[in-house]
Amino acid sequence: MDGVMLRRLLVIWLMCLPLTAWAGGTILIYGDSLSAAYGLSQDAGWPALLQARLKQKAMDYTVLNASISGETTSGGAARIAEALKAHQPKVVIVALGANDGLRGLPLAQMRTNLAKIVRASEKAKSRVLLVGMRLPPNYGETYTRPFAQIYVDLAREYKTALAPFLLEGMAEQRELFQSDNLHPTAQAQPIILDNIWTALAPLLK
Image (cartoon, rainbow, N blue to C red; front, top):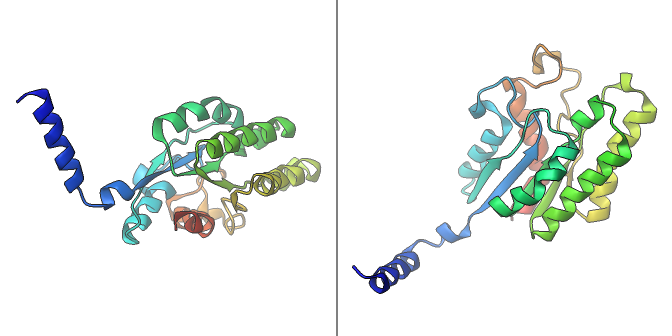
């Protein structure tokens, strides 16, 4: 079969594909260990549960989890351009900052990094969901309060969707955390998904 005939057959095959084959898009989860199913099987993590929910609702999106345990906003900002180019996501869920806070890194630096990730995503025509984080009170109010406010301010500035707190409703329930008191258990993952879903769902319509 010559090249011309092969190309004609390929065009015909593509034209015969169902419309749903063209309708899908990628949801890129861009986070740290809290989104990387740390200490759990990947099937138990909230990204896998998100994929299952999308399938249940017949929403034609593919979830791609690019989260890395230990990732900071600096690391995220450094690799965002490559991630966007590789995956061309329709939606980017930005869930970074926890490691910056736990390490007491400068808040101005964290804000700059998150802004870079959001700007790059929006420039790539991706819809952005910014996921807020909060820190334990022992870090002091002069650090924890402006830390949490960064997410609110960035969402307002760049007009992104905002999930106020990834771990909303879990802080006082010790049984929802692993032995390190930092990483959620499998039991907690549906709660995290619900926290994300409230802000994510409008972006998928």
